[in-house]
Image 1 (cartoon, one colour):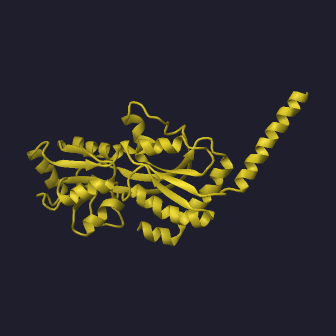
Image 2 (cartoon, helix red, strand yellow; image 1 turned 30 degrees about the vertical axis):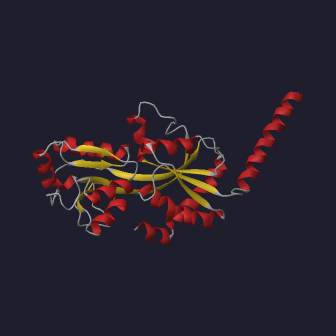
Image 3 (cartoon, one colour; image 1 turned 180 degrees about the vertical axis):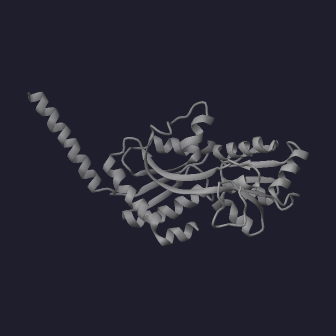
Length: 283
């Protein structure tokens, strides 16, 4: 009986401590691990959210870029961080989904290693070419790629985008030369510089270059056109029915983080995403 009472009071003390910890959370600054370099869509969305989340939480939320290996390095850091809510990770379609089937072995489990906090953004990829490429439309790009198999260089920043391009290559019956990048920024820099002829990249990263005339946009990869660029047709409507690929980002914490801390973070992230200021910045 004394042992049972000891266990009971021990468990009660743990519950009370956890509750007290959640009530006092956060008592110090938080970090938001971004598994990609500065300048890409995951980094941009992270910085917008972190700035506002700092206000909601009353503590600084510091963005920490840990790029490499299609996001594996940063995701591993987040997965192996202390499960106390002070390390957030901005996951995306690569780190939390595609990497599980494109890597023979991962140092983390995309499902078991994390607890989800909130989805952040979903958007199409843009297909763009360097202005020197003799293709004004997607059909002309396909014709050019067929005429010069393996000659056109295309860049990708992450395993999910690589699979999207290979999905397109298979559907169109073309072969282009793959150049992998650690993130969107270096890939976009090489597209603008002419080292790349073709780039598939998330809308928020690549479309500004299209709008400025530094790249030529040919299509978006989602089933419906983007309201931000209604003039860009979809791949599906250009003769590839069923082609529907999007990029998404979401915040997670390490598995084992107390549920009440996750439930403390979620409404604050949702409030940040619902604010007009953040909507305007995302737009």
